[in-house]
Image (cartoon, rainbow, N blue to C red):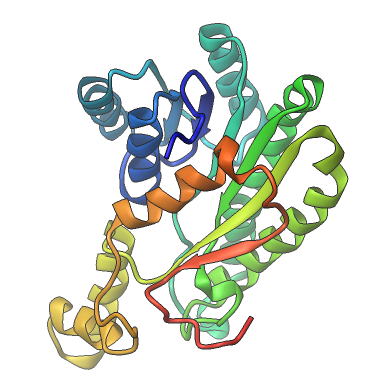
Length: 263
């Protein structure tokens, strides 16, 4: 299937590793030019070099704190200077710390909001005027299955990513007439550094190994295993493509069947 992404320009956030990098790799393979960002400079440069070699895509990589509007504006300005426009935005950030309500201070809540909600608002605010002017755009937010089926011990993520979902669903109504789609993609248990960290915490609490913790999660999934980042990236590429022009305002899981609800 030709996704119609050749020559498009995508900004993929938190793209030095994990889900963000997998999405960037998939889009690069489809002919998309890329603006990448992350906080860790060395990992970001490694991702840039690998994606350029493997896909031939043009890549601009810039270390950015997405919770800082000024840094986000600089990122978007540099991307436009390099490629002329931003057609596609994939918002993505690392998850906040695990824990229950009483484990987290007010500062923890403030940081979670900055990292996982404010970053989305800053990115959308920066790219939306250009998309509206060109009357074409794709905004895709990486959230979590936790917004539909809250995950125990992840109260920060459950709450703040739900806020992103409400924002995105409302924004979809506001910008649809400009040819802009806004969707959320909800990863389930996927083999990333974040999953390894959460498994390590669970393993320590239960006195088991990390792999045993991951197998315990896998036992809850109808497909019987955790996902791979590339499986997640395949749907992400479709949702930001020309082929998905009539899909907006929705949240789609990539979870191996972990969510058990009908809708």
